[in-house]
Image (cartoon, rainbow, N blue to C red; front, side, top):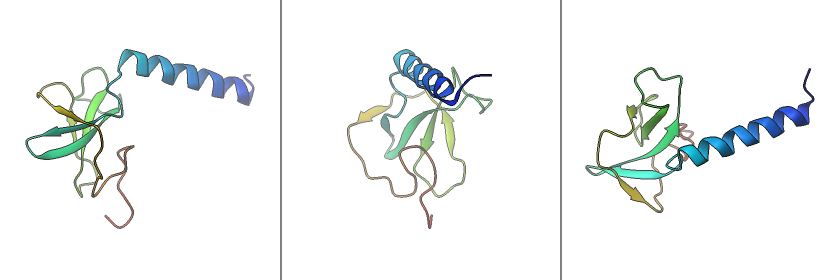
Length: 92
């Protein structure tokens, strides 16, 4: 059985490898006046390579497969309804 620190080390290495493979994870995107964040969500069935865009809306789940549109990458944007990790803000 792995020790706690070994599990944490392996998780950190896995996340680092994932970001190397998909550097767009965590990036803010804009398309047709809408803003969102690119997330790795392999649990969502319709996505390609596990990447989805979580749009800044009140909907509990507003995901779209990443890669079909010509998104504009944005350096900084204050989301109205979601956090940068894609979760809904409190009170939304």
